[in-house]
Length: 220
Image 1 (cartoon, rainbow, N blue to C red):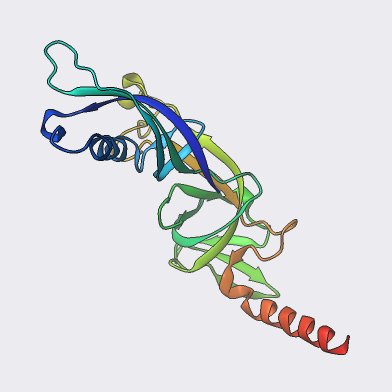
Image 2 (cartoon, one colour; image 1 turned 90 degrees about the vertical axis):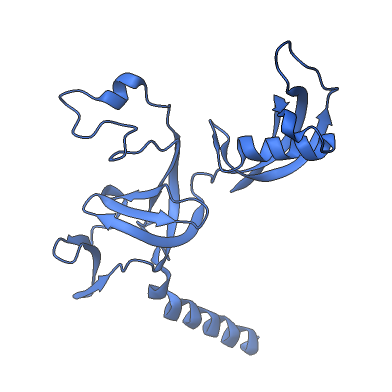
């Protein structure tokens, strides 16, 4: 889920920062430039891991800043396909569920990745699991366990895409349809992996399993 990647960049330290030690000034610039940003194909930057090297500073004509060729490592978030994640059910509609991991909330579970027993209650605006004749709601803010199916890195929308055309109800990259540089597509279909869905559904099952294991150990 979390990886360390090496990055090389030419960083500019502003004139107002030149009174600081070089490492301190460069570190601040890395954090300002990279933290909470998505690097295509690499993932969401969580934090700076370390700085490997900083060159001697150089100045361009008519530029008061100092430039440093810098090599450093970043901790990035990019879950692998098949990984199971825990998050909070943030919102939902008839197209699926939105899950918040606390530091990343562009995780979506589309309706085609639901078990057949799920159905959307339009009046309550919630998804429901039909289990043994009972309706069990997927309430918002509950902890949910999902499995990663795909990680998408979306290109920045062009000016034409932002303006849209007659076929677009809401153009991409606008307030009504904001641009998401990285999306995680997940599933709650537990045909292959049991325990997906709201964790509260499985608490009793997990406790029973632990009790059975304890009994087996005692018998041995």
